Length: 263
Image: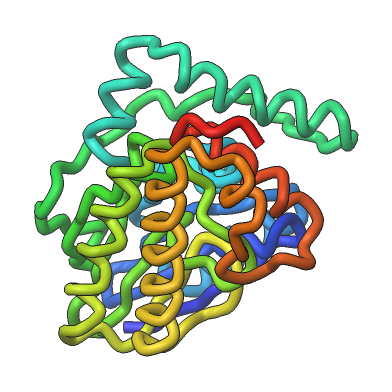
């Protein structure tokens, strides 16, 4: 088995290609047209894309499937159900992509649509992604539809938008996020050797575990100040990392709002 990680010019968004004897699986193909062309070229060189996986439904992770026509697209059961039901949140993901592309003149000849068919995978399921086997785990907290993949022969864990070294947690559900981090810490104490986050460089298991501990401490503190409605303490909270990155203070304010503190 072989692993290629191609990183987009937007937010260090990672597209991971895991190849085996029967072709390859492409996870989160992103984002700009020339980058998708490069992903398709690597996939072809690895025997062709036998499957595509979205780790979650956010727009920066789901627009590249048209570059790999014919490959079935796997997602968490939660995302498959949301798309099938016409959930407004799933529709908003596509609207956000249209808005970004229009704002920055990004051509998207195939348009902005979900694949015609999504294959939902349950938590804990073992899936054959076109000859590449992986164990699936639902990771909620950043979004309600998060999906991680563990490629056990490689000790490789793909975690979507958790454990990023270049941004703080972006919280959708704080309790779900805390539960996800605890689950990841248990997993990282096992046979995981490498972690590829949705954004940022590849990590050793030890590096990923350190990020998980820092993020859990941050969220534990966030819940504590939220319970007290302590605005001053919320404002004074140190970020777990990336404090000098534009926008992280805004994301911290959004996180504070999730626990009922207007900062």
